[in-house]
Image (cartoon, rainbow, N blue to C red; front, top):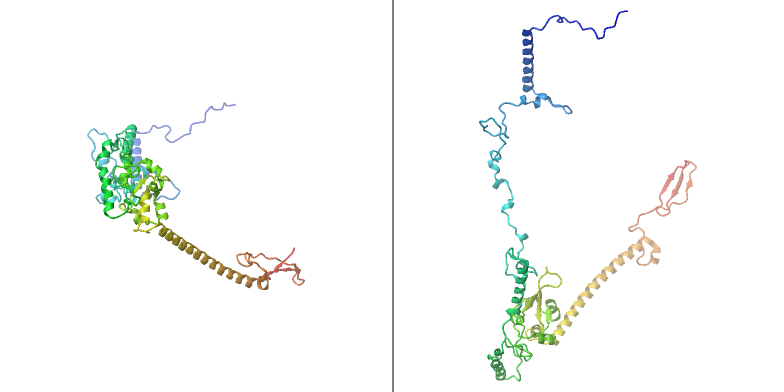
Length: 404
């Protein structure tokens, strides 16, 4: 028995016993390179059409497919002598002339100013006290000041505004003999020359108004804030002792209780007022306070109502007019309700027929705003067709049914 070969036999070829010629190898390599170059030129001239769902050919993304005259914007225009490629410079890429900054950008936020929405602010008018609203620009701490220094500055401003502490005018015993007694004597003599029985004073209460001296107790320790605002010299003790004369009224109280108008309350020469922060909300307008003595003198004087009786009469007259206006408005609404009630009763009688007389007001009217629900009667079998019929007891609708 012959032994089996350990490996398959070598396949015989025509050139098995002959070595390749170097000349033949060179011609074969040249032919292969020419065919490859021709294929690349043909792909550049006629690029293949892409079909949806297929991949791009390698030649379309190959570096050989890029034309030599194509411009590379990312690389610099001039290459260095050392042969190295430098990173791109942004200065070489400039926008077009027609799309410059002034023409292309519609709103340049770097040149815009904050107009506060068109409203005035403390920056536009820093001396307008109506814009402070409790917290104005002067209340902001400066940049180069510490909290302790800013607190001392706020206290100093408050004392200077109220004329208290170190800003209060000095008082001396010599002030009682600086001619003020002679001024009082001149006022009394002037009243006697006019033929009046007694001196009534500026506000009709018989008190002499001398600057720097309390008009009630002749004390020199007066409230200088009231002297500057109201022009009245009075001490703190007399203010607390006589609230009927020296209490403060709000703008609403002066308008409602004494029937004064807004133009009269806004006149500083006629009725001066003292401004205080609003106790309800700090961002609201400051509260305006009026002196009761000045308000009563003007309201009950000959320039306004003349007397307290005339003021009470005018107040009752306005209350009567307001009451008549409310009653007239109530009657108009009542008449409108009656008209709508009559229309509803007419609809009720029309829909209910004879039975509408027993229906009371407020009961629901059938047919208005209701969704009809059929109330079927007894089913009747039709012997000819074999179907059952039933009829609605309200609308009379008939339907046929087939029972299996």
